[in-house]
Amino acid sequence: KVILGIETSCDETAVALVEDGKHVLKSLISSQIDLHRKFGGVVPEIASRKHLEVIFPLLEELFSDFPKEKIAAVAVTYGPGLVGALLVGLSVAKSLSYALNIPLIGVNHMEGHIFANFLEDPNPVFPALVLVVSGGHTDLIFMRGFGDYELLGETIDDAAGECFDKVGRVLNLPYPAGPIIDRLSSKGKPLYKFPVARLKEGSYNFSFSGLKTAVRIFCEKNPQARAEDIAASFQEALVKALVEKTVKALKNYQPAKIYLAGGVAANSKLREEFLNLGKAFKVPVHFPSLQYCTDNAAMIAAAGYHRYLLGKYAPLNLNAYPSLMLGEEKY
Ligand code: ATP
Ligand code: MG
Ligand code: FE
Image (tube, rainbow, N blue to C red):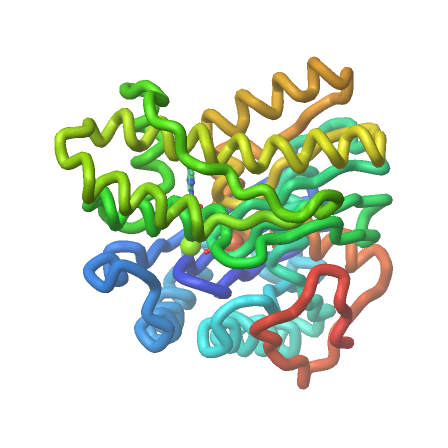
């Protein structure tokens, strides 16, 4: 069964065709990053307008060598995200569902990030420990099976990706700074010790706003320090914080597998440390290939396929939910 995935929750307009939740037939992404760059972040109103402009040409290209009559269902992100941006994808998905007479499936964007793993993991095993690290989320999740999530901890302030982007501003790097800091770090040394927030004993929560401030103050006081070394030191501290809580959860929950998800899952240091964790705890580790870490529609089609099998078809009056929680069902 081929599912059409549509993703417009933030600044990427993406469409994809995925067969049986695994085989990506085609995945197209139009990024608006250049438009938002001069503002240092995503401007919601510009995002919605741009989605509307590019989504039809993108769909035309998608269907250029695949007849749309062969699609089994259309899966679309209905939250969380920017409401105006979400509504563009949702409206297009509803029209296609109605016109082609196929089921409409609402997908949670964060569940999509998690399902990016199952596009390529030949052997999903549960229960699993999942660390979702993206532009807006830092969630440590105990996943008992598809659709069964227990949130163990989350960030109490900035998300991991947000922290990368904010530190990028301090270092005068363009938005989004995550991939650039990753590259800079490989040319630097973690010479400086930045603080890793330790929240109260027993908590799986994260905090990254202190780290961001520490980097800013350090840069003001040490204008001679090399950006490469600052980047490497910052990345080391951030990854350390993520690893510490993951280790704690590994000990207490003994999952059968570890997954990484979200844009920051593309980070080379984090991937390396997770592979080490897997070896140390003798637990298999999986993360999405780089192209499926950041926003895309193949992951939405994959999560949509799972819901399709369960018959979770949405009504045509499905709304957008900007702060939809993982596991929360709105229809
Ligand atoms: P959310 O999924 O929480 O709604 P989002 O969709 O905006 O947020 P993603 O597309 O998952 O976020 O990820 C984008 C984030 O990932 C940005 O903050 C970016 O800086 C970060 N990022 C991308 N590549 C890397 C990397 N190699 N190292 C660190 N961070 C990275
Ligand atoms: Mg994005
Ligand atoms: Fe995302």
